[in-house]
Length: 436
Image (cartoon, rainbow, N blue to C red; front, side):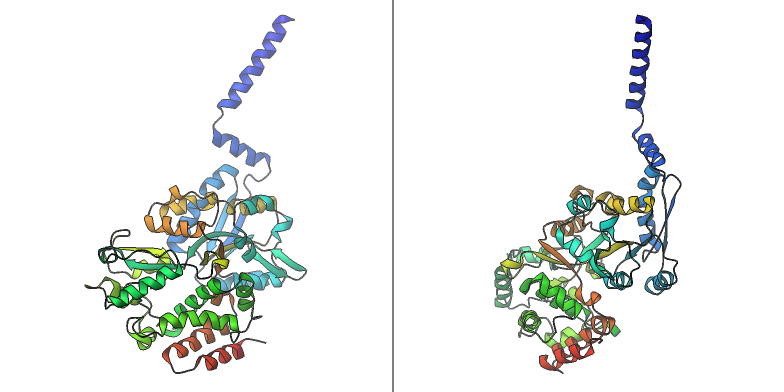
């Protein structure tokens, strides 16, 4: 009897020892196998091509190995046209990455998109995003509002770049408030220089940088509710709220001596050439507001943190906090199966972009993404700007109907800045172009 008991104890201890020593990857793989998803395929489509597609596939590789799920991603340079044909033709991929939420909203309205509220543990997802990300993913479906997606890689636009070496040598200080920014502008002008380098020429897309500035001021002088109403066409361009935002733009853009080249220079200078005057000797201008992609247009051989740096464009009204204007990718679910749910839950975590962050060039919106993952100073500082945001909102013109956001908004604001149209004329023309 005693031998039997001892033998039983020996076997039990051996089993526990084996289980404890089992490699972590083995445990996770067997978990995936037990849950019935081993060998399952999840199809996905999006705009990532070439190097971005490689980085995306590398980012999901560890998840695929752990779960046994095969994420088959297909990228397209004609993404918007091709995805519309597939979805409306009843051949939607399981998951689609939308770089423009406006297009996603169209499919939500058509009833094609799975409501994540009904299929995922939303408590977990809410813990990993600030409320603004959830708000932007909440869209109107045929039977009411749904949670249409989760956010993946993002970028920030609310950044002001400067020539760090010359800036420090001049004794200028990075402004933390709007008042400090205004004081800096006055100091630069008192020194006989020009504060801002601005250009909005971009061929057929001339004017788009101006829309970014207006969106920044909409977030800094109005509520998020007003911003959302404006984007949807419920708040007219010819309204006190939008006029207030354009008024802040005009204080900088149309004040004599504030912008290099003046009004004419703004509309004739390419957006990519505009910041280059900051790096002439001596600098012809000192500040340039643009997203983090703009460094690719800087002169060669400049080093971040040495030759150039950036700061967050300060808030204006304290009641609206520290808003950040962003662009980014929202992943939506079109077919509901256990393996697709698992992939969507994965995309709601920083782990889904960890290797991509380490490769450089993207920023995560997830709370569980670590700053230590960022391998260059620019990406890390942009991530800090986004992490410190009290609210975020997507580029407004990208959310508006094409006739407005990529049409009359660009054209009419350019006409106003150049002086060929009054503000009244420009705002009325934009409102008249909104599709009925």
